[in-house]
Image (tube, rainbow, N blue to C red; front, side):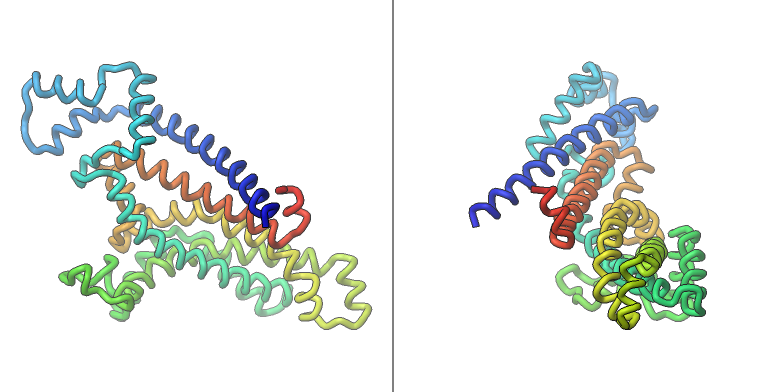
Length: 331
């Protein structure tokens, strides 16, 4: 037990150091880009107030925000505030950035998790079917569907689902995460799921095609290997070969691609959440960019980078459970 705990502590320390280093790099790049932006944060803040200020008041705001300080000094002041948990105040929502991220992340996590699970299960299953029935009718049909879906923009697919299933058929609500006019405490879990279906389906169809096509090719490579030919010579059936030789060999690449889709799903959620007016991080970062809300934009950027890093760390830990050789290398 002590050896296992020590091994896990060593792994988490190594990945923790990598995540901290990457977040530091992301913070530097993000701050440099924002500083180089032509947007004047002080002027944007004054416009958000909806009133005019005197030159003396503007000078006080600039002094409070440290606009006249050197860029390096402003960065370290901002970084020290981040380390204390102070992400600043959103100019758009007039609330602490960390509170907005916490609320919006719950909605985005539910959306991306549903889409991520659906795309992984459906993509892996269809990829296995295509690989097992290579060049047959099922393989040809599913492969063409994957090619079509992988080339369709997310926002176009979302608008199509919205038009067909919400406007014409009326099966699902037009948007939002809860019914309009209903208090948050009175919303049931089924109502939330009802509002979640269309945006989650849009996101899942965006990424499952790549997983399906990648799994198909990996399975074809496995089935054409020499040890599979030997297994066929011994009289093993097609599904016995898949169970004993194919499944584990294609599972690791599928997991790699599935966890790598975290960044893709987050990027797609920006478009999907705006199409369906879904109150998540994607719609928040879009509103922050359009309204020059720099504190919220920087906060969501760092949080999304952390989200992707944690996803990759989980994938690397799962590799050790699937492949003992990778587990030995991690130790």
